[in-house]
Image 1 (cartoon, rainbow, N blue to C red):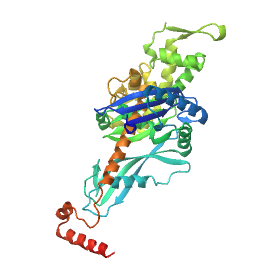
Image 2: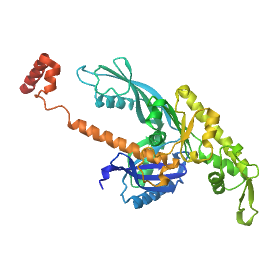
Image 3: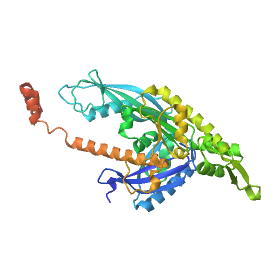
Image 4: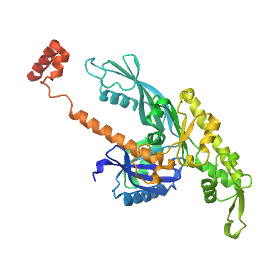
Length: 430
């Protein structure tokens, strides 16, 4: 198997670490060759808090993925999240030399590189620069200017920043686990690749990825990323509330949430009771399902309020025709979609990462829990495609000096020929 056709995604989450190995089939769909999963012990709210424990968890997940896929894993695409992630808008301008030359991908790459030189606050760095729309000679709203003519090329950029230390710790963990980083990808962007359709991105949609430690938000409108945010609450705070509210241990609280949890207390019967074994021979505890749902609903409403604040803050609240898509482990809670609709008044659906998956993949992979992992593999393939295109472009660069292409004669006409001949003459003199 050609290793260049295989991409590995590594999702370092707060509750789990997932390594997913995938390749594209002949229809361009993603085929998952193998997946490894381990408990995440060294990560708190999306940020590495213990290097050694995280390295151990990564190695366990990598070993399992290697066994299942038969692929020797060396290079990975890694997701980054955490409360330290921020986003800002910026405009870049590039004045080109010639009106005759078409705008190329190289011009756009140079603009993006300029954005990477922006001065950040101490301790912060740019993680990603995403072009939104372009302006060519004051012509607004251009999505792809390649092939156009123009002198002044401008672009609005969505710039994602994060703490240098957080990114460095991720790199450190991966290098200690004997791996290399191909790309560092913002997790909500990865999830959006896995669960959103192009139509939803055009219409306007909010992606909400409820993870263990954080909830990621990404807003798209007119096919363009408009806003990203990371909220420092996730499924773990709900488990913590159940633990406190029901006076039980954390493992029992997590199991209760998964098996009997609901986001709407009205949907539960008053007389439904769950009995939990007592510790070391103590009396078993009886817990009301309605009470459990009330605890979950109260915390979820707080998370939704934070998400709604981000939507209002983005300025796109009234332009989101496709409403909301919820994914991540938290999306598996019963009635979570109804609660989101009730609080925000927006259409809501649960996002499953089967939009780009080939048929025949294990059912486990299509769970919302693995949306980020699937998205990281998809983003990895997009990066490979860009690299291939760049290599093709550089191999098709200008012919040697002294030769005039057929197109130049037609396009430039008589004067262009004289200029070329004069240039040729002086080059020969040199």
